[in-house]
Length: 503
Image 1 (cartoon, rainbow, N blue to C red):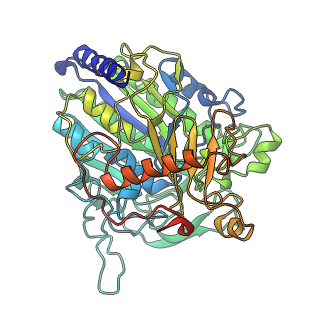
Image 2 (tube, rainbow, N blue to C red):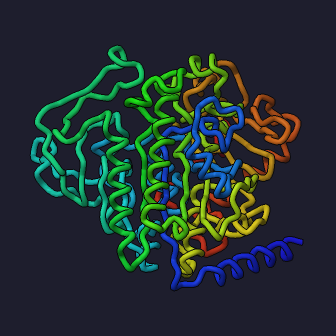
Image 3 (cartoon, one colour):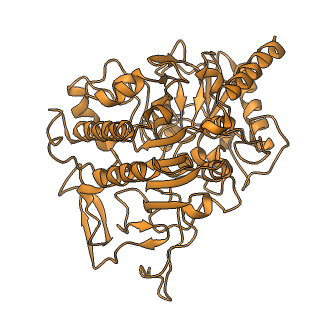
C-alpha cells in the first residue's frame, strides 16, 4: 500500500513539473509575518474578530493550509528552518534567539532558498527582518563601527541584494543595512520602556537618523513594491523574501489603522499588515505580473503575550484559535501558523488543506518547481507540497518535529503528538520549573483529533505509542535528516530526552 501511495505522489510531482515549463518561470514572493497567530486572520480562523480582507482575498485566490507549522516557536530558529529546509535544532543554536549584535548563524556553504533560486536563474533579494545574525565591524573596545562594511549577511546565503534590520524591531542597533553597508550612522540612542508604552516598547540602543520605528512597516513594503516594479521590467524572474517585523513588538500602528479595530493596538497592527499586503498585491497587478507570481504568506510562530490576550479575549478574539499555548511554547499555539499559497493558473483558488506541512517544505517545493536536482544537503527535512497543490491529501510528510524556545522537543505522527517536557517548554503555564514542582510527568502524549487543546495527557494509557514516537524522533535526530537520503551530521550533539529518561 505504501509503495502504491509513493508512486501516486511521484506521478503527481512529475506531471506538475511538466506543467511548469522551464522557460516560463514564475516570480516567487515569500512573505513572513512576525508573531502573527493562526487565529489572527480570517482564512485560518472563521471566528477571527480582526478584519483581514486582503489576506482573505489572497486565500480566496489560493490554497490555505490549516495544519502548517514552523520548526520552532520563536523567531531566529524558524527563519533558519525556512531558509535551509532543515530543522533548526540541527544548527548550533540549541535554544533561544539571536540578538541584534549576534554573529551570523548560517554558514556560507549551507544550502538556502537564496542559493537554490539563484542557481535556477532567479534574481534573489531579501527585505526586512533578518534575525539570523551578521558580523558587524567592531573596534578594540568591542563597539560597532557602523562606517565599516557588514560581513556575512544575507549575501553569503544566496541573496544578490538585501535591505534589512539585524534583529527583531525591539532589538538595537536600529540601523538599516543595504547589501553590506549602513545607510546612515547612528548619532544617538533611543528606546521606550514598557512603563512608557505597554505595546510600543523597544530596547534602548543606537539608532540612525533614517530609522523611524513607527514607519518601519510601511517603509519595508515601499521598498518591496519598488523592487517589484524594477524587477518586473527585467528578463529574469525574481525571488523576494519579505520578512516583516510585525505585528511583533514594538506594536506601533499608525493612522488610519490606529484605533481602527476598536479592540487594541495589536489588532490595529494586524489590520495594518493586512492593508500593506493588499498594496503589494495591487502593485503586482499594476506591473502586469500578478498571474506570473507565486506567493507564500506565513508567520514565524504563534502570537506573543505582548498582544494582551485578556483584552483580545474580551472581544471574543483568540490569536491561537482554540489551540493551547502561544509563542515560545511546544503546544500547538506556539508553532501552528497560517500558510497561504497563491499561484494563479496552477493552484485552484478558495481551497483549504489539512495536509501536515512544515515551513521546511517551502525549500523542497521550490526545488521541484524550478527543477533543481535534489541534493543530499539542503532541504533535509522538507517535503514538496506540489502534490497538495494538485489536490492530493498529503505531501508524503508523515511526521513533524517541533521545538520550543527552551529547547524542548515534540514529535508528531498522524494525530499523535509526544511532548518531551513536563510543561509548555516556553512561556505559558505551567513553565518547566513549576511543572516539575507539581510533579507532572516528564512527557506528555496527546491525540490531537480528540483533544486539539492538548489537555488530556494519555502517556499512562498508551506507553507503547510514546515509545514508538520516541524511537522515530531518535532515528530522525541521529540520521541528520527526516527525508530519504544519506545520513549526515548535525552541527552539534543534539539532546532531546527529558533528563529523567536519559540513559
